[in-house]
Image 1 (cartoon, rainbow, N blue to C red):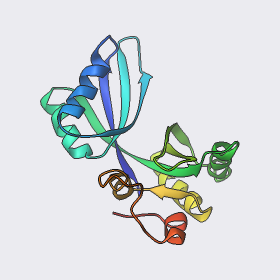
Image 2: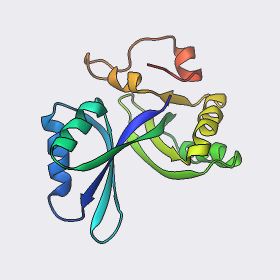
Image 3: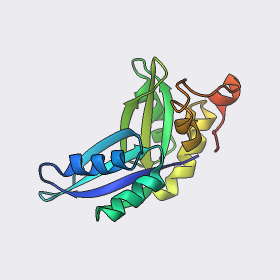
Image 4: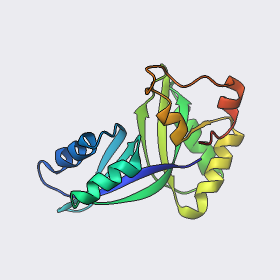
Length: 168
């Protein structure tokens, strides 16, 4: 399952990131991951994983902030030496092009979430490679289930969780 990521196009000047994050916060949406990439001397692209991306998008558009949705893969991997490289090798060995990647810590101890954006033609292939190698794929449903009730991931069969794509 792919997760919607918000991509914001901001002016590359002080206070712009704070303004955008504050708008998302004020709309009642929790941000789970963010990365900023300098696009040019005057522009920055901000990539955001948020619990309710539709509500965040509406608030950003009302504030006249240019934003669009992008679909990404989020893999839940073990936080140990070499695991990130192993996952990248699995994808590389299948000749899948990763356009960008960033990581964020998981709510589960000793786990890391890896956000991958692959070229359009490679996304499904990347999902299959990860799934076939028992890499957990996180969905919007999983993200929403992590802290709304104050607990970690909602209970489910662990074998199913570790070997299948979780769908909402």
